[in-house]
Image 1 (spheres, rainbow, N blue to C red):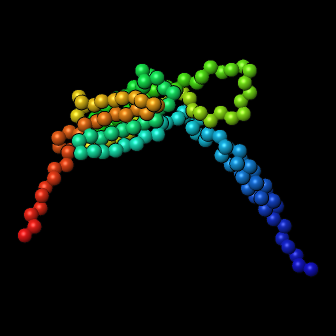
Image 2 (cartoon, rainbow, N blue to C red):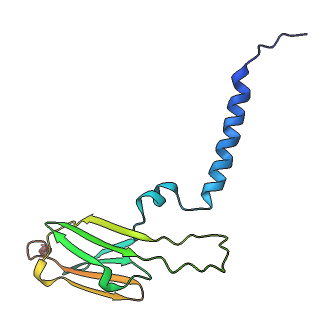
Length: 147
């Protein structure tokens, strides 16, 4: 018969691991806690054409009049608020995943743009901002002579 040392914290470690798994599984089906605290951020696509920089942001359910767009130097900021719908007293909620509240998204532009020619449009929940490149930011094409 062999003597086995008693390790009282092994049981605690196993218990802690199981509790961590339980909490991870519980919160994986809900928005992350940090999202609940800081609000939400719209997803964005940034593309480049020969003459423009185009930013598209998903802002479904937001009145375009409630969206504030500002450009300071090379930093573009989009702010607004998504209002929560009126709560119905007869409904019992099983799950609430849609995000509400104030949002602010700031991005640094990769090049300088012409501030006076910026255009913004909003269609089907997508905000599209067209930022014309400044002349020095436009790429100059140089032809190479082959001899």
